[in-house]
Length: 279
Image (cartoon, rainbow, N blue to C red; front, side, top):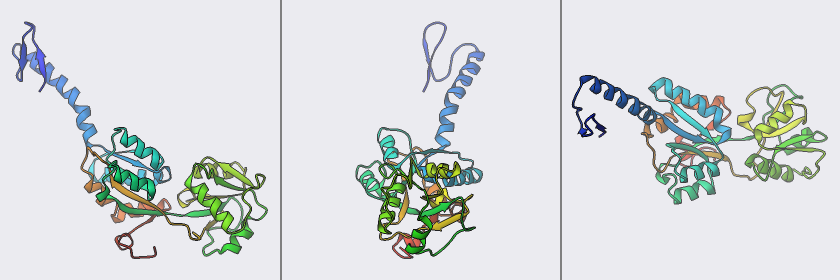
């Protein structure tokens, strides 16, 4: 309850004494003060991995069109997102990489462990600005080695980016020397690899499927070769300020899953999440 001071120095609690215009002015002040808080309470704050940005923007727009509730999206690597939430930055829902960091966040109650749901799967692809038109499915190790041989290849920094670490391990497993600086270009991220290709600083690159949705003449899905799948979970943050359940249910809807697929992701359905499917 707001407490206002009158001209006589006395405090009026609740209704104001004196001129009716003061009532009007006080009501306007209350409306101005409370409107931003009310609007903020309606917004949904979502954190997500940078590679999910395009997909989450699409899903957020669909949610706003359906409900009128705006989605405020912030993208940051999983570890940084959890650090932000732990420092008290507001978050309602988070899309994070599955793995040790997420398990630790659940134990530390940074996210609510009971709400964690496997939601999306990404992949690695070999892309190039020149070569065969369209995607090449079912390429084996020999095919990939032949495509890469003699070409300058770009990968993300393996010490900072999960894409680069996976790419480096894959190159070693298929017998390609990954320590030749003349043949290997290092970018800061998967998106940076795309930029190296666009500026002709490399002929080929290994990126996430989400970074290879358009503009490449060569696109080859890469095998896992005993690596774990690249999966993302969705979970409720420790102290959400909005009701997250409707949005988290919407993530599984046909409209949302179509948006995820358009962004290069594979939604994980309930059967896969329970341990079925092609896991």
